[in-house]
Length: 181
Image 1 (cartoon, one colour):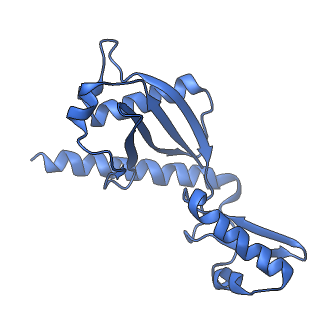
Image 2: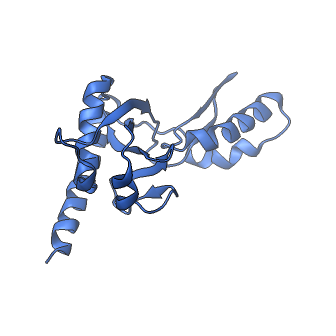
């Protein structure tokens, strides 16, 4: 799975008028976004998931600018888009059971994966469990054993994930549409 993040160019006063907190925000949609103000008047905006990742920074910027403009149209500039300065994509591992996969795959081969977009804060903990297991100093990794390492769809897996995410987006749009009536 691939997800995307952009950082806008400085947006000045209109950013402060649109978003009145410097706290991190995650919206309540199933296919939601997360964002926060950085460097005073820039917006770091993350979201979207695709099974067929985009790596071209120009296309990522265009895609995420459209998404950002759909939520905060007041940030659109005279060019008709939200100005983006930086963009990047990152890979995330998801298991069908939505739990990290930690433990031995075979003798002397261990896995520590599938953190579902939360690897920055939790992968080091998983790595510690793997190290303890390899050294024989702890069996805490066994807490993850019941979840196992299930097959995640093979060739058709990415299509299933892409379909699931797009279904969540449609559901979000439908809920937003209905809330207006």
